[in-house]
Image (cartoon, rainbow, N blue to C red; front, side):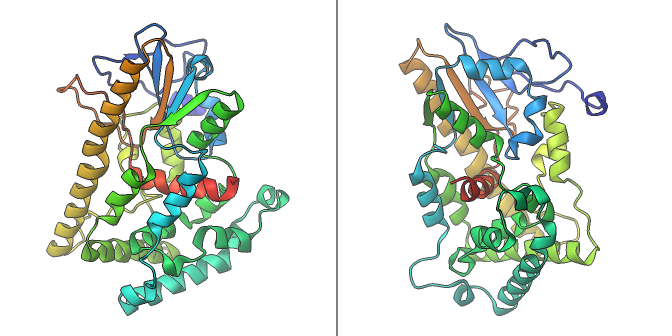
Length: 353
């Protein structure tokens, strides 16, 4: 009840979508929209955190929509082994290359020191519940960071941001998307995906070398400052979860998920580095939001037109909401920050499968 007291209604509706009616849980907000047709179809905004942190705050109408829908679509096919192998392959450097060969020596040494620190601290970060399930620190470290010297620097940057105490404590529990996929499979629903791993993965690999080095350096600087106690992240995973549970779609928290990717743009950067940070931000927005919105929207539209007699439930990430009220003919289906999604997907699958 204390959490709900902070919650305020903050949804922006697109012309073709209508926010689903509230059920008995009228005090809870919902990331559910209904497409008015017979039978109805739904869009549901997920969050890439352990489902146990948010499930009790998801209203009954959202759960009922999931139960009633005969077809459930996700961003990626989370139950297909190819998804895992393709994601792993996409992260790797070309054959014969190692991270030590491509990174500047000082960054490589700082990276190695930080990973040694994480490995040392990980036993103290783990929970009794994790240990009770047979999840041990050495295994977990190797599952997350194993073969790190063969990964592309951009994926090492994501990995470093996921190796925090809060993140480690959440390992072993499926994120909401994966939980819904497992439930859909258990209920023998037809499932599908509107994207391939390569479409989410390749844009990350498309950053040029200087941009990647800048991003990795900034990530290490942030983690080093956190270790030294000289920096406090303004927006944490806890903030993200709170705002999701409140249904606060417009919150600044959703566009600054510092627990996954550091906010590279800040006033302390020298002018040239600030330009690089802005270039990275612009590139991600173009490749991972605008182009992806259009691609996913076309595919959703084609599915709805091809199967007019089927009820779909589309479950996509809600970290970034494209509030495009001017172009109301476009379906707002990609609420995502793809780098966060791929990182959380990798985190879940390595434990669950």
